[in-house]
Amino acid sequence: MAPRPREAPPLPAPRPGEAPPEEKRGVSVSSLPSSIDQELLRAVPMHLVLAGCGQQWVNRARDEYHLSQRVNEIDTFLSHDWGTKRWLKYATLLVYFNSVPAALASLLMCMLVCVLIIFRVLDGWLPGTLTIHGAYWFVFVFWQNIRSLYKKNMAFLDRLCIAQHDVDLKKQGILSLGGVLSKSRKLVVLWSPRYFTRLWTAFELSSFLRENEGKGKDINFAPASMGPLLVYFSVFETLLVTSFHILVARYVESVLQQENTYLSSLWHFTATMLVICAPAFLVIAPIVLYLGTMQMKALLQLGKQLDDFKIRDAQCSCCQWNHCHPETGEILLCDRMLVFQTLKRWYPSETSSDAHLDRFDEMVHTELGGFVRNILGNGAPPLWQVLALTVHPLLGFWCLYVYLAVNEHLFP
Image 1 (cartoon, rainbow, N blue to C red):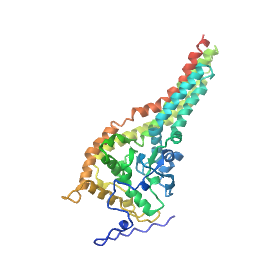
Image 2: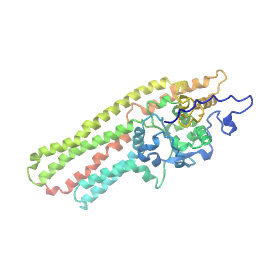
Image 3: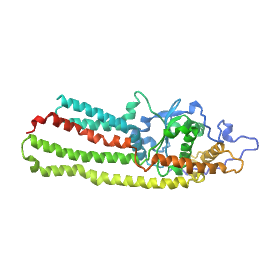
Image 4: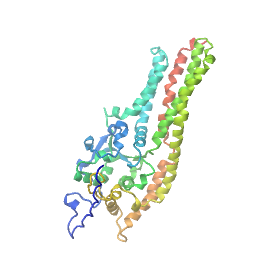
């Protein structure tokens, strides 16, 4: 067991006219600037963010700063909290970034299979159905790897893009977050019920909006529980559609053989249906209902969170750890002090020392609260996500009907 890290001693106050210790080393800790040293503007290809079933979303002590690279602009800034489960974020990012390309891949494969059946190059429909489904799930999982061959989607993930191996470099990276946000084209919010209780996440969203009022259209909310919900529903639909088409195929087989095997093999058919449908109704359906219920419950809490938000009560890891890293014993900068000083620069006031905090709270209650409610709406997922995840089960069996149409002369 690792020894308990020593309690962080209080930082000595600088003498009059003397700069704080951090500023002596050339790192300003007064606030978070909107500009950034180009050497600190780093991003990582999206396929590495998703690699290993989202293993990068585990808050590990191992430094993987070498995976990131210097960029001129960041395509996607990923805003999230580390308390949300890794598999929720992984599934949601797959849905958000890969579902549409996967649906297009299954459509193109369906068209190709149908052409091969029409010209009698492909004998039978089952290989085509399996190919269409296989193409969908392959692209759904590996689209970012395929895309990286011609154009990488460069994303900012704090654990990979802020150095963990060098204390000074890590501080500079944290202090540059405002500049990183100003250089980001799009902000993807992996929203969870914890999101607006954290200091950094609320600041990231507000900072991105503040940089440019027109950037509201570049903020995309991806509820962390919505991705798994849609994936499970897609699997549920696939199993049900498969059951129906097994019934159709069995009927066609009995007609082509001109035998009364349809009723005689009813027991075998029923057993097959139970094997296929049992996972759908006994496993997947309860999971879909559970995730849907949790999503609605979280959305109901969202309004209260926004209305009751107070930046003074927002949580941050450094204060929870008493400004001492629990594993290394490293003394940490106070995130709360950095954010508060930045807000003081945003909302200058000579009447009250805490007026900038009150103005930020008011902005969250009104402007940001209205913005978030308009995006999330009634909590239903975007139509394009629903279509992208529900169309492939139907496309997978389209080739069956094409096969029946081509071979209609075989029917009596």
